[in-house]
Image (cartoon, rainbow, N blue to C red; front, side, top):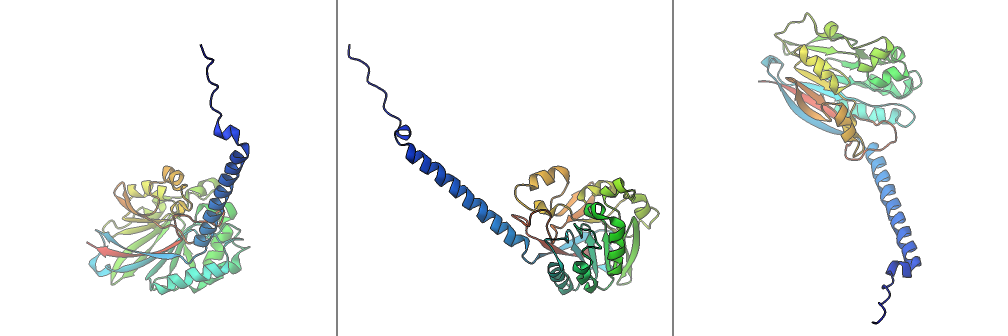
Length: 291
């Protein structure tokens, strides 16, 4: 019988130079895509924050207080990569909203507050009818929370440390409370919901400032109407939102957890590399509505 025909040569084996060219081309293309994504992310991280406007109905809100305007700012992360120019731009945006109340819900800094005091100085220009209030975030504890509190209050922010104040709008009262961040528990300054929310008039609504959305689970036990949070950055860089969502009950926007509404802003700055992909920087304006 005739001998079997030899196997046909593999085209790739027959042309190793072509295979090398294809590999190099693929590597170059991947590099260009990565560089393009990094450049796009850098551009988005430093762009002016967009304004998210939202009406939030609160069943216990007195109709006289309908229309109370609350600006929400979070996660400036002022440090070597985010400085005074960016802070001044955020302040200008917030002031343009004509808010009745400004809330800063944590992570103002990634460096010691004393080191970036000049960069934080534009916060002194925040304008609103009833003042500007703040709470600690986890990064305030990493960098020295007592110093941060001193600097923040020197700049005109009222830091709510497990306490509440009364806001009167249109002749009707709303409780504004703030609790320390979860990280405070490692630094002798833990959140205390009972101190902030106990023994209050249950007939009127309470808005709670708490840096991390996960704190809503404790807030709900105290009948909080609305919690304002940051921390997540909306994921900051796709696909890290998957990891954030595994840790926090809300990634961004308005949701309800255990009967309590929680609003999470994507934050005005960034943490780590100056990149944002799929989660642009944000300042929020919530208008409280009676129902």
